[in-house]
Every structure is written in C-alpha cells, then in structure tokens.
Length: 289
Image: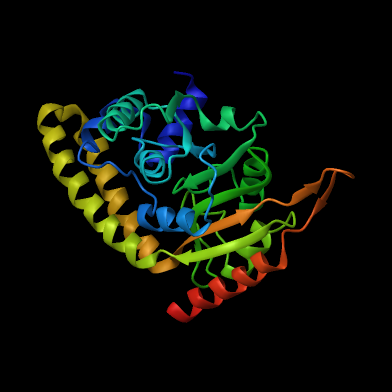
C-alpha cells in the first residue's frame, strides 16, 4: 500500500498507521462505520427516484452498510469505493446475505484517486469522512464530477454550532451554518433537503465507543507492544466524541446538480419546487433544534 494511500486511510479512520492492520478486529462488531444510515435511507426514499437503472456511488463505503441497504430497499446499482480489503470482503459477504450481490460492486481504491476522474452516476454519497477533500466548496467540486446533470450529491457531515476557532486536527473545514450552506451551493446547485442528525450521532457514537474500548483491551492482551498506540487511539476517540457533542451539529445534506440545457449546453436551475422544498426542510430543521 502506498504511503499516501495509507495516510489517507489512517486519517479517515482517525488512527495511526501502525494500527491499520488491526482495525478490522477493533471494528468487527460494527457494520455501519459512521454515517447516519436511517437518515440516508429516508433521504433517498424522499427523492422518489423510480428508475431501476439508477446508479449510486458510495465513497468510503467501509463494510457496505449504506450501499447494501440502498440496493436492498430501492433496487439501485451501487458502486462502493474503499481501500480496506477486509472491509470490502465483509461488504461482499453482506451483499450475498441480503441477496443483492448482482446490484453491488465493491472496488478497492483510494477515493482521492477515484474522484480524480469524471463519472456519470445518478447519485454520490459521502458519509462521515470529514474534510477528506478539504472545504465543503472543494468537496462539492469533487462530487459534482461524479454525477450527471441533475444528479444528487448526499453529504453526511455537520457544521459548527457557534463560531469558535477549531484547532483540532481534521476540523478546519467546518464553518457556521450559514457559511456552510454558501459553500455547499457555491456552484448554483440546489439544496433539496437538510436533516439534523445530532440525536442519532450522539447515540451511535456512544455505542461505537463501548465497542472500541472493549476490543481495544482485548487487542492489548494479544499485542502488548501496541498498548501505547491503542491507549492513544481509545483516548482520542473519547476526546473526539466529546468534541463533536460540544461543537458540531450533525447534518445530512442532499444537493441536486444543475441541469444543462441540451440545446445550448448552458446550466439551468432546477425547478422552483425544489428550492421551496429546500427552504421548508431547512426551516423544519431549525425549528427542531
């Protein structure tokens, strides 16, 4: 594995390179490795996409929880990209278990490399990978190249509750809500919906932490030489979840890429109805807070 790819994986899993080979053991009890799965499924359902030939790209698919659930519930064709071979093997086994192997393709590749080329998916999903592409503006720049005109971009991430200077590694792309929306829609794409994921995130993070602490202690007994790195990893996860709960508001956004007029090749805005839906959903989200 190339050093750049190894660092990319380590950063996405928030661990040291020395622990990468042990992550399948640490995370063996978890299928969904981040991401607000129920909200993602709900958001996909709300789009009412009828075509059975719909193609979805899941970047950083992990063990395939999001991909397989979408394939199972909607019959869409899914391409999942990840670099962790054990995770992809688990994803393939799960796809067979759910009877959707014919709908799922899992590819081992660094997502930074994958998005360097243009694709024409109907939807792309980026769930809980933080600022892997940098700012939200840069993230949308990358995602727009993965979907066709009128396609959807789903980003499961969050924004800063207030406006503190976030010095923690991996959080420099976060901004307050208004500035986040400005970056997300910088290219004239339409914000179809916004879902607040705070409650789900707090619950799932607490469950993740229990599992990681349990498996981490087991691993220390088998590999005492890793005790320091494992202790640091567990401590970092505790600090991470506390930081998120205090400073970050979880959110799932669905954007629709501007359509192009086939006659002029000029980008045209999506119908006003989508814009109205965006405002209503955003207002609903704020009222829920």
